[in-house]
Length: 340
Image 1 (cartoon, helix red, strand yellow):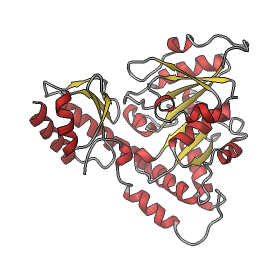
Image 2: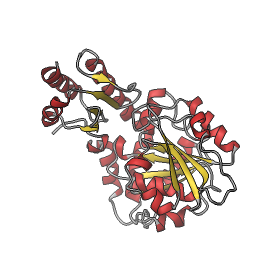
Image 3: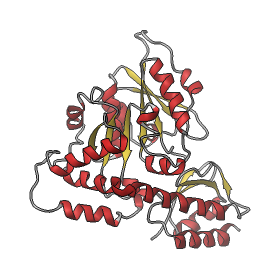
């Protein structure tokens, strides 16, 4: 069944599958001691900067937890958007495993600003308050919006001025970079990000994410943290091989551009419908809209998707690298029939 529930539901890109098959030859040293992992870590330096240090993990929650643990103590606080994945969709894992308190900011578009962050920048040195240490932003955000390079720089400059760190949840970083027509380095480490959770699963990988630090000093104890967090993959060559394929010949950009293009095509069709109201700008590959509540179940039976906010009858439609124009056209026909 085709649908728009999540880019996690997409298939594995053929080039990624081919890379897995090539990696599946003979024996190789485990836990990252293989040549494919070594080669891919060097490729990350080429893509993100010579100083970065990369650690492969199983999933996005693990990447976020390790990012937080590496740069905080249990008495610290992490400031994030109220919609952030670490706040909403990780079952309290960041708080349980890091011990840190999350301080969510109410936001209408998934993006936080310096002015909003400032309201939590107090109580430093006061032992009764959790001490702010890390700001976490998501790129692209959970609402499909995208931070500009200047917006990331502004946040980074502010938090660094206070001696704090900036984390970026980049589960859909490729979509954001494609939307901005820039490199992934431009909106991460060149803009002041200290640690990045770089997602691959939503952009064509079978499994695997990466935690990327701006420099070796920040990553000093991460190999121990990764092991304690149960995120050390013994047969790491299979994770690394996928990222090598993704970062070779800009496959990441090709996939993301197509995904974004399909979202724009869906947006254009939705704008022609009277009874569907878009609620967010379509910056990347996510479309958020309010539809008549009595039509949702009928629509889901033909193209499955998730309800985002039941109280508002707001739904989310996600496109992916393997979304076809026929999928968009077919869904728009169903929308026209059901909601007019």
